[in-house]
Amino acid sequence: MGFDGNVRHFDLIIIGTGSGNSLLDPRFADLDVAMVERGVFGGTCINVGCIPTKMFVHAADLAATPKAAARLGVDETLDGVRWPEIRDRIFGRIDPIAVGGKAYREEHPDNANVTLYTGDARFVGERRLEIDGQETITADRIVLAAGGRPVVPAIEGIDDVEFHTSDTVMRLDELPARMVILGGGFIAAEFAHVFSSFGVEVTVVVRSGALLRREDRDISARFTELARARWDVRLDRKIERVERSGDGVRVRLVGDEVIDTDVLLVAAGRTPNSDQLDVAAGGIKVDDHGYVVVDEFQRASAEGVWALGDICSPWELKHVANHEARVVQHNLLNPDKPLAADHRFVPHAVFTSPQIASVGLTEQEAQRQGVDYVTATQEYAGIAYGWAMEDTTGFAKLLADPKTGQLIGAHIIGPQASTVIQPVIQAMSFGLDARAMAQGQYWIHPAMPELIENALLKLPLEMGH
Image (cartoon, rainbow, N blue to C red; front, top):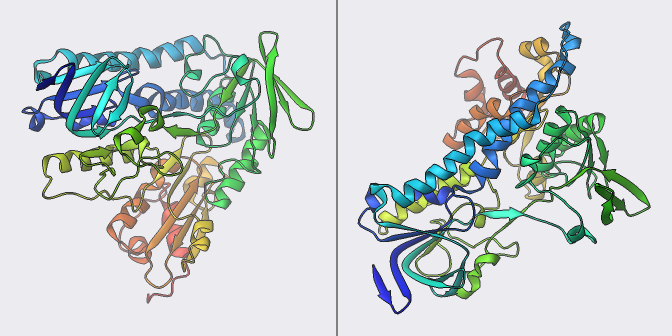
């Protein structure tokens, strides 16, 4: 440790306690380390992201079951949804994890070399930070793991009404009768499923002509079709302004459309927190979207600075942040033998209903890039377990190089898509061609992975049999 007047110097500073918190292990015990967290310890995923949202989704899936059971000859009823009990069960498990994680870093003997700062960090020079404008700390090396935050568009009147984002909507005091969701991405799709399953009348307002428009176009089109049958979906709409209306909010759309709601959820995407760190003052470059620019080793443009997770990764996925954290950890410990991050085949899933999962190129991306490809589609309705579920809307779509058989993309909409896609991710990651994948192993019959087997067998490959 070192002091220079009111400045304290560290060997390493980590900004953010999400995936950044996982960097430290006994190999860092000899370093003087500072961690900075301005919010709740543990980051987005555990507190307001992946974990609580999927706990709500699971409860929503159960609540939605009776409605779908009748066509299978099973008569069920939903007697009620105890929202406060669901909410408190979820956060009663999550909140102690954040408290315990903070206490571990502050109090446990294993962390005698770690100083935890609570407050806003801003760069005021090269590897030089101010905390809440009061304390100044410097370091030989800095890791940026400060994540991102919800985007709140510049809508007239938005500052004068009560609205929620994904950070706050899961802690509502009670279920509203009506909810308007602004946005058509994965956050909007998941919360529309959750709240509509719990009995809320959901209206989704989207600027574009489709929901989940970044997905493969066939997936987006099918999901939009299904969503419009379930929710009030307003496509190609622009918001003129929002205003108070009694105890709720009135949303005025261009063209004199008016929607009154009890709760307004803004789900317009997320943005990296680089601007709030004033990274430019530290000589750190960002791209046009505010993501910190990093090389293959997760090094930022400034000497001695690394970045990981949502502050630098446009994927904004926890499994990507965790991978990048392992890369940064290795490179901090082994500067002479740096490890490159692997972003070749980054999968994602949308836990709405039906589930959606994707990896690799969409068909429109393959066309834009001029990639030679063939495609095949397999409906859930064409496999035995699809018969069991009477699923008539789900499908898997594969893209492959016709000459080599290498898979270049996979997109699934339907039950357990996030699980069913995993063999494809494995095949792409380890270079297993489609024909060998389909014919070189057993596929359990009649299980859902037959969806993938059949799609593989349908690919019109040019390679030899």
